[in-house]
Length: 363
Ligand SMILES: [Zn+2]
Image (cartoon, rainbow, N blue to C red; front, side, top):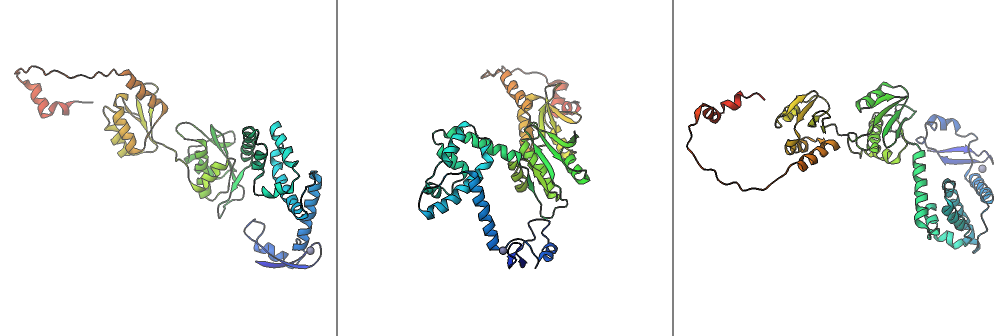
């Protein structure tokens, strides 16, 4: 909405649009109260102030005079200053070669150079100038960018946040941590996602079972955002994935290798009678609470079962299959036909034929 205010500097009336969406402070009530009072600067005074700030900063930056036509220089000074401001976040982390390129870049006094390259980001400009040593500088800049993206906590705000303080999600390679004030809903989300309380945070250890830390951080971030909590994630990739829900879901169905018996242990989350029956139909399966256990020699059947019902093999189970295969000596043979002899069938033979013995067997 366009509203009228009085400029704090020149006292003239001026109009400007107001927005109520950008901050919780800028509500309609807030603007209504400020309307027609001394507030902010008119366009002219704002421009003047910005220009003064810029001039002051330029002279403080100590950049050299530029060469070119008056118009070129005017324009180039602005461009160079933008790049200079952009450079500030990199500068303290540059290594000697980066510093050298930096000095060469800002030592460039040809106005045309700055105008020609006005659309390049500072990082790319620096790389270009350092073309003699691109790999090193690139690595330095990349390291800086990574450091920066790690240091910056990205706050993701759902449309109707139910709280103002963001829940913090921290990601390392081996652990995802969730830090928040005490809140039953958050506790429930964390517990249901397999987090446990340790040293003041809800934590999940990363292993082959969980998948990558970034995926798990995105996963819990997505759940918390969906529940209406603002979320701050210290990893921008995880943040993006939390919003887009584009992460690998956590697999809760596993075929592992039992520590004691070296057999396949088939395990899943929750109760599922149908799945249990199917798993128990695997050859010579047995039940060892809470797993269904199958010998490694039936790996083909277990692989089929795993494929059908979304089970994954643990690294140990995969190793068991390789070891089992390696341990088999396969010899291709063409068996000769046995001589036929008439033999009385006997009771056992008859029972076998009718399936009686199979039925009596207890396995
Ligand atoms: Zn003014």
